[in-house]
Amino acid sequence: MIQQNRLLADYQTIRAYTLELMSGLSIEDHLAQSSFEASPPKWHLAHTTWFFENLILKNCLSDYQEFDPQYNYYFNSYYEALGPRIDRASRASLLKPELKEVHRYRSYVDEQMERLLSKQELDEAKLNILRLGLNHEQQHQELFLTDYKKALANEILPRAYRKDFKEELSLNESPQWLDFPAGLYEIGNDGSTFHFDNEAPRHKVYLEEFAISSALVTNADWLEFIEAGAYSDPQYWHMDGWEWLKEEKAEHPLYWRNVDNEWYQFCLSGLIKLNLKASVNHISFYEAYAFANWKGLRLPTEAEWEIAQSKFNWGERWEWTNSAYLPYPGYQAYEGAAREYNGKFMINQMILRGASVATPPRHSRSTYRNFFHPHFRWQFTGLRLAKNL
Image (tube, rainbow, N blue to C red):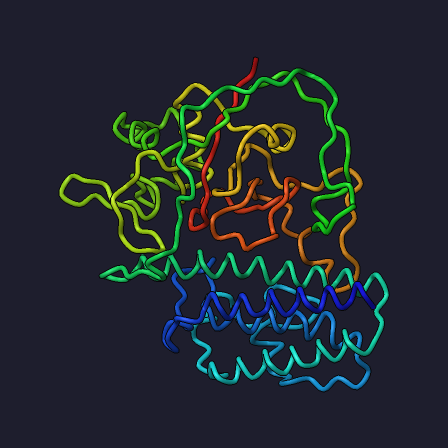
């Protein structure tokens, strides 16, 4: 039971951190949903609780009493095997259950989880689902910050989430090229620590010789890209990217503001003057590709990134790669309802590597494979450059 006691402590810490992140929000704030890809805070609170109820408690406690059968419809995200669900774009329309009921739901499930972990010894398969649930909640902690930031930015007078929230933890110095020889390398998680199913198995890849930048692209670099007219020059863009650019009317990264010919950026701490030394962020894959093309360079593949990552600092921006989100050779999805967690999304999306300033403690690792559609930019997304040798 030592392992379970440790996991129970992790459970309590992670669940408390979610509440701490949302502690300053009003009741109205909990319904903020800025766009289709973002979810309101109240839904995040309930959905992460729903996950523990439906994938763990119902399968482990023979006497478990479901809190409210309607919640499966309200708070199921995309698990087809677990029944129908509310349309994603309508999550903010859920006036019921009230916020106080959602908190009561969380408390109820927490009590049942603590009863389970304290009284009943679970096999390794069930413990792995628990670890998945903990990491799932951490993913939603990051999503909450990015989703809520977009909602705040959409207000006529953008307001801060927290004045002391730091989005720029370090400033980039002059980048250096890091060279790597051609050869056979290994990537992927070796199974010694928790990992999502899409990070495994560890396998061999052959890479031609390449170089990768030691630093991320900065706001100053991106300003040169803008001033060079690259947002209006189709030669640098994918066709899909060019169509997206015209439809979106994009002229700069998301959250940049030009006020009286000076550049500002909306951050979780409020509207601040653009720091030219900071890493650019909130850019789409389309923009990242076009920038690299404009520089006569390219984005690294995810294999190159993983091989090189020990030689540079990472973790403040999710970094776009030029790799499509596909299964590794020998990929095995989770069993049961969790089978839908990752595998079914392995199409039409691009891989990001690293982590971000919104990533919670102890949730980043070098084999982590994040993935988004190429037009998304509400996450803390940036890029570093690579080249052939």
